[in-house]
Length: 116
Length: 115
Image (cartoon, rainbow over all chains, first blue to last red; front, side):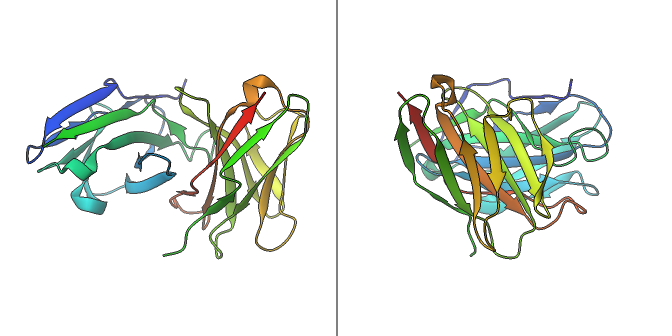
């Protein structure tokens, strides 16, 4: 079955340090991969996406993600974390050439806590 | 920057009552979606809508649910007879087209509480 895994419920990092939020997906065709962020009492805000091309994708607020086909991963990264990055992060996948043409399949989410 | 808006932000209803959740997608978008997130669980796809008809729906989207685009701006989700297990955050999203891998932009959500 098509699925997305975010193996960490929470990631803790000190401000100024690099951060990584992990995401892996099940193999099925050529997926499109997305990261969204959710701040308290807010909706899901788009950060970045991988469709094709360069495996390193840059997005909003200094975030980037690397698509690794051999490891079926799409980890979110930032070189220097800010306290304001503290939020809930969701990885999502879309499989446009198989069943579920439009729908996003979400991971369970990872709570990022950046400490001063 | 254009945004998806949703009303109300919080809806409390009694079990068995009908509710209508409203969304205003981004104005030039053509595809509309509803997702829900039960507290502590994943965000789940419910339905997608294009050209005034459902293009895809999940097994969650049973006969109790319906969607409509009553005019040129609103997109609604109706639950005919709410159950306790319908309590969740409901997110509306829109995208320009599914012909290209366009990004889905989400609204702030409506928290539905069924008592």
